[in-house]
Image (tube, rainbow, N blue to C red; front, side):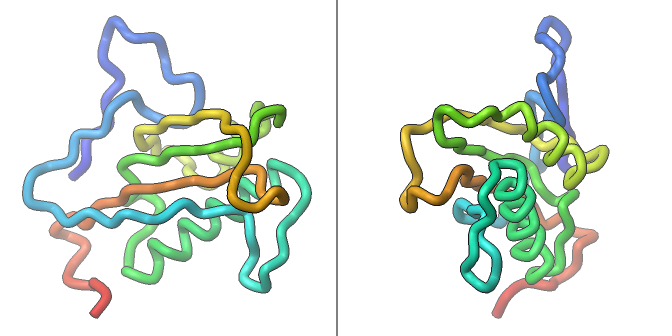
Length: 137
């Protein structure tokens, strides 16, 4: 089981995350490429909150395709286009993550690959032995 830690002597996390994720030896990791706020039909919502919601849905879809849930996330990295008011992200992440608190890094960037995109989220998840053999062929 991945253990999430917030060491004493550190400030409390600023949002729905943990300062550290301790992944046990011998587990398989799943690395998810940066997911953006693009729907399956190729459309992109206009607001940062809507794009964040869709990016997290896309991460959940990736996880589901290999038999995992959002609770398998060990680490997320979030890139937000500079100038956006990112305060809305705490609520969006809390809604998707629930009580789960993976390690997290967030940063502002000048621009993403498509100017319509406002956010991109990378993720690392882990298969625990109890997750069974569901792995892509």
